[in-house]
Length: 130
Image 1 (cartoon, rainbow, N blue to C red):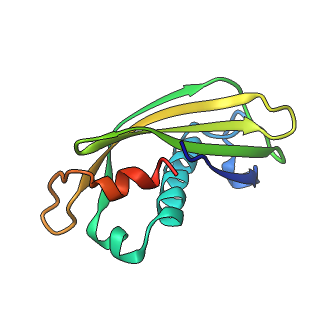
Image 2 (cartoon, rainbow, N blue to C red):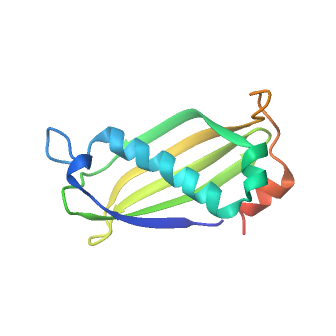
């Protein structure tokens, strides 16, 4: 299983009225991690011929992040078959290594021309395993 990682620092725009990272921001980071990982593994042609859409998000909020916190984001694909894949994103406090958020998203591969589900090719499946 291939793990893709990024680090970021919590900035004021990430903070909500409770003075911690807004739940919507975590969802934005989850989707951004999926995009960044996909882009890092694929060619422009592969991205033009294959488009992922979300079918379901499950997000467990374990602890809060605050202004100035350094966070560590990890993502990996756990399942890939038929037209769907399951992607996990974990978000940690980089200093304490405490898990803040864990998500599991079911993605569907689609054909951008028809906007219909499309079987995930073996070539695409194997890039997540490298």
